[in-house]
Amino acid sequence: MEIALWANVICIIIAFGILILRISIQVKKGKNGIFDVEAVLDIGKRQIQTNAYGIKRLNGGMMAVLTAGEGRDYAGKVAALTTVRTFTKLYDQYDSTQSPDSFFEKVFKLANTNVLNIPDMGKAYAGCIVLNGNTLKYAIVGHMNIYIFRGKELILLSKGQIMEELIKEKVSKGLLSKEAALRISDINRAYNFVGRDDYMPPLVSRNDIRLKKKDMLVMLTESVQNSISVREMEEVLVKKNSCKEKAREIIEVIKGKNKETANLGLIIIGM
Image 1 (cartoon, one colour):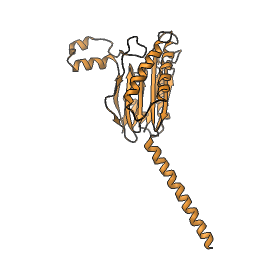
Image 2 (cartoon, helix red, strand yellow):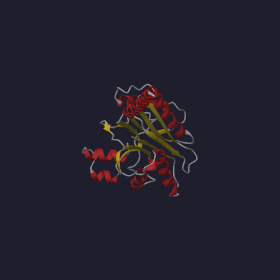
Image 3 (cartoon, helix red, strand yellow):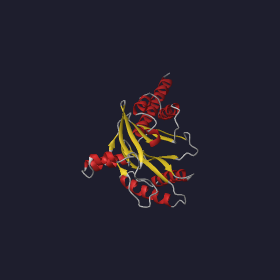
Image 4 (cartoon, helix red, strand yellow):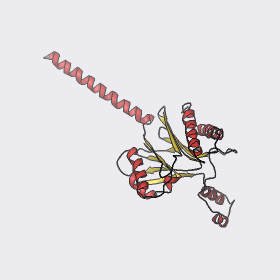
C-alpha cells in the first residue's frame, strides 16, 4: 500500500515537472518572438503575377519582404522575384545583435545591382520589415504601405517613396510653396524603385518601434491600398481569427467588388 502511494506521488511530481518544463518553453518562445504570419498574392485580372514575397525567421526574429514588379512581359515578375531572393539570401547572414539599418543598407543596394544585371529592363517596388522580438524597423523603396493595427484602428506608418510624401517634406522644409505643390500632378507616382542606374537608398524608419501584444503589422502593395478602404480593412482585422483568414478575407473583399483588379499582395504579422 505504501509502495503504491509513493509511486503515485512520484508520478505526480514527474507530471508536474513536465508541465513546468512545457510552460517555460512556451514563455521562452514568446520572448524570442513567435509570430502569426500570412502572405497572400492574387493575380487579379492580369495575365502575369508580378508581386512576390519572402519570409525568413532567425534567432527569435524575422524578416518579411513584399515586392511589386513593373516591366514589359515577364520583366516585372523577374525583377520582383530577384529582389525577394536577394533579401532572403542576405538575411541568412544577418546578425540580430546589429542594427537592421546595416542590413537595409546592404540588401537594397545589392538587390538594385542584381535587378540591373537582368537583361530585361524590369524594376520593382519593395517593402521590408525586420522584427527582433517586439522591436520593429522597416525600409521601403517606391510605393508600399505599412500599418500597425492596434486595438481597432489601423495606424499608417508609411506610404513609402511617392511624390505626395516628397512634396509634403519639401513644403515643410520651405523648399516648395503650397501653391506650387498644388500644381504638381500625379502625386501618387513613386519616385524610387529597385533597378535604377543611379541607385537611391530606401526610406528607413528613423526609430525603433516597440510593438505590443495583439498588435498586427500589415504591409500592402499599391493595388491593395487603392482597392479597399481603411475602414473595410479594420472590419476584417478586428475579427478573432488567424492572420491567414484575415489576409484571405481582405483579398476576397476586393475581388467581390468586381473591379478590374491588378495583382494584389499583402503580408499580415500578428504579435
